[in-house]
Length: 178
Ligand code: AMP
Image 1: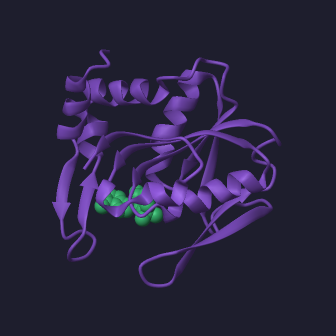
Image 2: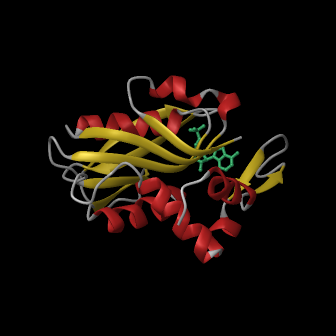
């Protein structure tokens, strides 16, 4: 794998823009063509692992649902555990919950109360950073467990939505920016 601008350009080109999904005005970033390409999927995982040595991370926390795809693969590569943050009502054991604002109304995400040990070194991961509300709520859950966030990583960042502002104080990295 090469870590050059052309590798990132290829990844960016493999992300399909679907206008007006799931509702008018939304430009949906469809990652399924990227995932279906073995070489580009592998390159993506390797790039997300950059900067972390195997053994330097205790857990990769993935956000429901597309975050799981990347977080689980990165966890395997780094020799770390995988922890899911899920939409409310999906996890079976005792949970901490966190509300966050949507365009209309609120949503709630949850994590098991024993998912991370205090002080655990964690990467928090999702496929896409838009307004930052989801990732900020997920970061709050990780903090509630007393774990340490090394980085919040995304495959895609929609920079015009300024989601990074909600993640101030955390190292934030995205591979491709639209
Ligand atoms: P936000 O909380 O606004 O940062 O939204 C981030 C979450 O919504 C991520 O889990 C994304 O998968 C999803 N999402 C938001 N906007 C888009 C988009 N334009 N294309 C694909 N997924 C999106």
